[in-house]
Length: 267
Image 1 (cartoon, rainbow, N blue to C red):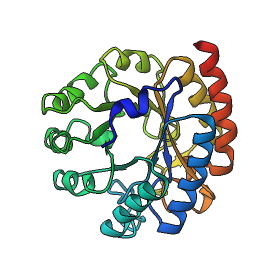
Image 2 (image 1 turned 90 degrees about the vertical axis):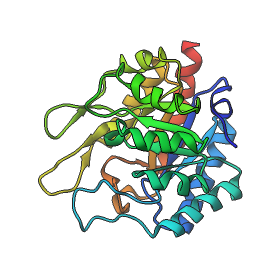
Image 3 (image 1 turned 180 degrees about the horizontal axis):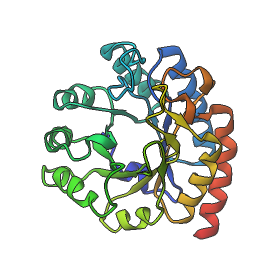
Image 4 (image 1 turned 120 degrees about the vertical axis):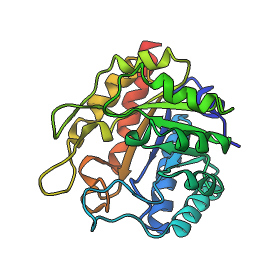
């Protein structure tokens, strides 16, 4: 079983990256192969990210997935093929045990980070639990979400910064949150893509500012983040979910290379 130490006992930052949602086995394997090759060469601990189902959609006709079992089996195949851990979101308590049969890290979406039963269910699987900070919470308030998991007997906790609500249709990143959450005693991840979302657009499709992904990632490394979360896709403009704020896959290696230089400089 993958533990926190498998990600964090390295000298480098770790990476959670992949498509927003599993669109199909071939694409998932293609993305995982590319990122695995890059991260192994750069000595970056890596976990493949892909949501097996999207529950938080603006419109009822938005793409939600290819089917739960099919998507979860795809995540397992990615893990077994490339010998890497995987991470996926869960939204309801019954999903925790189901997803835990297939993946190594259970991710709690930001809007659900206060849901006690969901946090407890994730904790009881024994898997790593990555809790995304709600857009409406202070960094210090994440101590209570983390405590729910820890008090349920699971110390394997990650906390993820993903921006704070700024008006009705924008987010802003307060980089003080990274060292403040690290003081709680858990590794902190910077979500460099969702933090650039522009939600609640009038057309029902979330917007974004992907040109600033590198800016957010560089600043996060500079202030000491332990890991990065980056959604990436070979063709973001054709992605079935969150394409407006995803990093083109062919830009990932250059970005990671530059981030390593910053990490080395601050060390």
